[in-house]
Image (cartoon, rainbow, N blue to C red; front, side, top):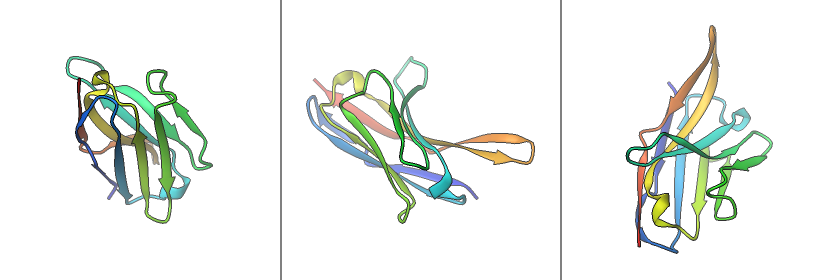
Length: 119
């Protein structure tokens, strides 16, 4: 079955860096668009970054120039390198993909990893 497992979250001071990882299994990873979302307390889930099968990337305005999404198809892993972290980056970060099914598409989410940035 499809599994997405995030790791790499933690507590970091403002200005610091973290790298999140998302290991994937159960689907054709190399041909699948992967995404990172985040959700802060009391806020809606927000799209952070996307990477498609051609390694084309897109970023939310709040993280452009600071975060980098990448993938290693051999390891079936997508990464989110986060630099110059700010307290407002504090959130649970989720790995996401959408896969075709017999009746349409289905969303798959990881369990999330907490990132806390102290000021």
